[in-house]
Image 1 (cartoon, rainbow, N blue to C red):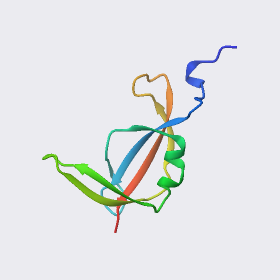
Image 2: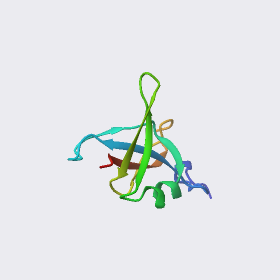
Image 3: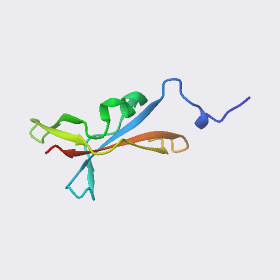
Length: 103
């Protein structure tokens, strides 16, 4: 039996993780913090990124210095299907994670 390649379920499911930082407390707009990265499904949807968890992240400034700050996960990661960045005929799972600066 032949199955189309874009309907294949991988044995080790990975998702593309997109990390967004809300720009203000109203949560009306957000900025992507880094390029999307492949992570395993359990990392994206396991206990690490549950709503309310706090994390320390560092961003590299234009002068190549690091600026660490604390963020809080605002909600559970949002799972969507989007076209693969290299082949738009293949749909891939994308988990979008929204963060707010920690109070």
